[in-house]
Image 1: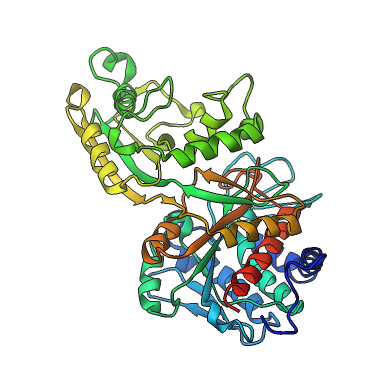
Image 2 (image 1 turned 180 degrees about the vertical axis):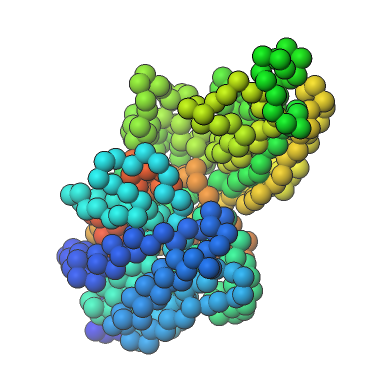
Length: 485
C-alpha cells in the first residue's frame, strides 16, 4: 500500500466508507436505479423477441451510460455484442498505483428480469417503482439491477478515501434468469481479457436477515423441462368419456408421484441426491440455531399452512442440499370461469427441479426422462422435453484474510459480523467460474432477504441493506489489495 493510503484497520475507517457510500447512493444511484425498474427487459426465456422489443437494449444503454459517467480514473466501459445473443456490459478499472501486483477482481451481476407475475399489492406493479420507507418496490431492483451500481460505487468509495484495490472487471450479463445461455459465448469471445481472477464477487445472492452481511457458501443447480400427456386427439363430453377414457389429469398426477412424494415433497430419484458434506451440515445447524423460526418466517403462508419441517437446520438443508420439484406452469386447462364439461385431451406442465451442489444435471435429467416416459399409465402418449439444466456450486475453503475482511466489511456496513449460509437458488455463472478458476476466492452475497420475493409479486430492494453490501464490498476490495502491496 502506498504511503498516502489509509489504513483499512484504522479506527473509524469503515464508518467513513459507509458515510461515503450512503452519499453516493443518494446522489448517483437512486435516480438511475429507479429508471431501470421501469424497463420491462425480460430475460430471453420469457421474451423470445427480446431483440425486436428493444427493452434489453434500453436497459443496457441506461446501465452503460451510468457506468461511463463515473469519475473513476482509467475506467473503460464496453458493450459486447454477438449476433443472436444478449449483450454483456464490461467495465474495467485499473489497479490503484502500487496495487498492480494484487491481480484481478471480477465483480458479477445481471440486468435481465423475470416476468411481472400477478398478485402485486394495490399501488404496486412490476414496472412502476415505488419507494415505501426504506424499500424500493419493482421488478429487478434486488434481482439484480442494484449490482452494477453497488460494484462501481464500492470502487469509487475506495478511491475517494485514497484506498487501494486491484484491477477490477465488472461483468453484467443479460441472460442469467434464463440460465445464462449466452454467457459462455461471450466468455469465449473475451479470451484472456478476464485474466485470472484471484477474487470473485457475485452480487446476485440472498441474505437470511437484513442486519448483517450474509455470504453464500453453496447454490443449487437445476433441471427444467416440459412434461406432455395426451390421451385423446380432441376433447369429448366428460359425461360420455368418463369411466372409459383415462383422465389426462390422473395420468399426469401418477407420473408426478413417480418422481416426487406428494406427502413429503421428497424427490424420488437417487440421481438427484448427493451426500451432504459434514461441514455444510454443521453450518446449517449453527445458522439454524441462530436464526430459529426466522428461517421460515419470511414466507407469506396462507391460512394455517405450515412448513414441511419445523427444524430450522433441516429447513436450511432442505433449501440448499436437497432436491425439490415445483410445477411452475400448466397448459391444457381452461380458467375455472371458462371450464366446460369436456374431458381434456392433453395437458402439459413445466417442471422445475432444484438439485444440490455436486449433482450432475445431465445424469439427473436422463434419469428423470426415463422415469417419466417408461410404461406410461394406460398407454397414454407421454413425453418429457428438456428445456435447461445447470450445475450447482459449492464454495471453496475461505482464506483467513477473506474471513477477516468479510467480518470487517459487515461491521462497517451493518454493525455486526458476517454470517455464512447456503442458498437454494441458482447462479450458473458461479459453477462456470469455479471450474475455470479453481484457485479463486469467492464472495457470493446479495440483498434478497426475507419477503423480498425475487421472481414473485411485491419484489423490493431494501436500501440500507444495499448500501451495507456496497460498503462491505469496498472493505473487501481494500483487504484484497493489502495482501499484495
